[in-house]
Image (tube, rainbow, N blue to C red; front, side, top):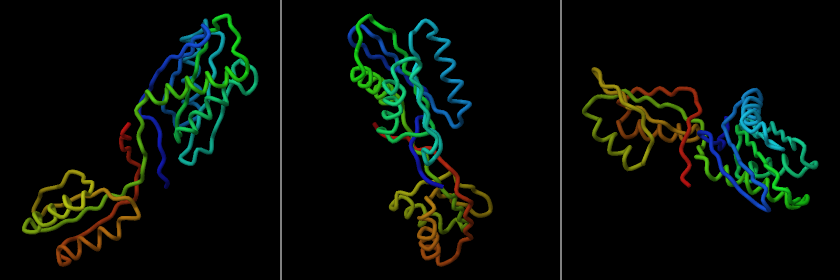
Length: 211
């Protein structure tokens, strides 16, 4: 499992140059079907537009990539949108840029810059998240040890999940896979081995990305 960056919700942005109006639409997508459905929805929304160009990148390793010029000269629309996605380091995302022609031709270079810029504006306006694998570490211990462990958690600035309070307390920590053994060792040392530790398989979690 590898970490990757994506968006957490849909976003929009607009850009105008030489009387041509460009509208960017972004959406998270994990499959080609989801990406195609979003492109189709934007085409229906802007059925009167001359072009609804698109691109998407899918997979944690960004291995699935596709772009569509939708009637613009080859390589002047879909690929610049795709490049904007790659420049922002994002995956599991689809972007559509709608263009209303203003009567003044932009030329190939102008189109490339306009589609890339509009897509970038849409991406910058959309909240991003980092998807990372985390393991849940559960440590069952006596209440007499709780204060010591909680203080250690604060000092180490560890991520936590809600604890369970029964006959004993079960403290729950969220750790990246490469951190698990270090945390396990420190917990054992801290409690003089007076805790029962279990570690769950890694699962993906979303962490907000600060702008």
